[in-house]
Length: 364
Ligand SMILES: Cc1cc2nc3c(=O)[nH]c(=O)nc-3n(C[C@H](O)[C@H](O)[C@H](O)COP(=O)(O)O)c2cc1C
Image (cartoon, rainbow, N blue to C red; front, side, top):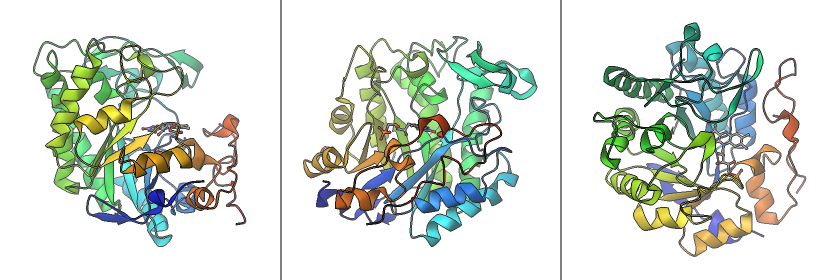
């Protein structure tokens, strides 16, 4: 059973959270027109007993083209849908950050505007397959962004944050993990640029730091960053992972963030060169601010980690899918329901609710 450590209040950014259980960002693909909607509002409100909810990744540009039915925030007409979500979560007593995201080379031409090549630091194809209108396809070969285009994307992150603020979010998380665009800039396997955005760790971190500055214009201290240095998702590699991420974390120390969200690799996804199951400890060593640990935690392990000072909060992903009242279940030791993984992602022709809002709270 989880211990008291998990249920103590904590300050995060400008917010006081009622517990240290965070709902991790999870893509669920329930936005058929790219706009957040009433069913998504219900889904998030059901989970508002988390100290903090972080939304699924949200497209800051229509060139973040990885998934069908993924929601966006790249125009003012996206604000009203998200307002439904924030109002519902706040009415249920919760707090919610939006995860801002660009997928970079994790994209397919059929999902890109005008069928164009995906965008990346360098023209190096990633590893993996995506669902496209014509079935599963390997990632398309990207083209390298120009310096002007990089600066446009940084500005688009800022605009997205401004809209998130107008939509009533309590903060934003910048998605720097899992092989998407920011991660592609950070690691030298995917970033072979020779300008100010490539080469040294300092140059590779410049894109992330530019985004933080752009986003902080609208959210100040209420900005988190998610990283997954030990993950190889989508073909990520770095020749000196520890050196790279020690530098990144050192820079984040200066950035006045609400938190760093550090993800342990998923089983089978670990980097061979570093940190097998030690990513959170690595982050604690190099980052002095609030640390949010993630990846395969049970209530017991999360409580222990917090009690021992290894992290300040713990986020849970999969456990929230079938347990909307996860904090209460962890507190009482109620058995956790197992999600049906066949409908975790929205399926064409299936009502949005199925496998989404139809998991009941336990009768405690
Ligand atoms: C269905 C699903 C969708 C996910 N989508 C995202 C996402 O949009 N953004 C993100 O940063 N991580 C995403 N993740 C990763 C989770 O945030 C989390 O890092 C991972 O599930 C490990 O935590 P857990 O063991 O508690 O599930 C997703 C995970 C799952 C299972």
